[in-house]
Amino acid sequence: MLKTSITALTEVPKALSSTLDPYTDEALPDPWPTYRELREMGAAVWLEKYRVFKIPHFKKEHHNG
Image 1 (cartoon, rainbow, N blue to C red):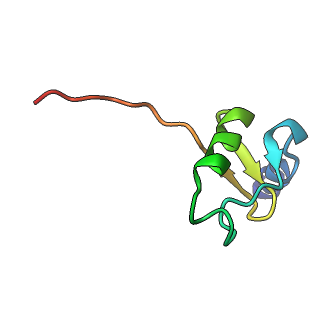
Image 2 (cartoon, rainbow, N blue to C red):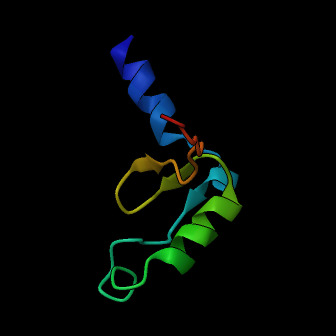
């Protein structure tokens, strides 16, 4: 059963995957354009190079107190 789960993770739909690398020397000094691109792709994006999901969205909450 574990093998099935691992296999399922390798079959990521192309619409959710990206070759974008937010950790390059070019991207790190000013990451905001890269973050914007990732947010435009969707709520979760599969980074092919790192074989991980990047969640580029977060909920802003303001607390008074």
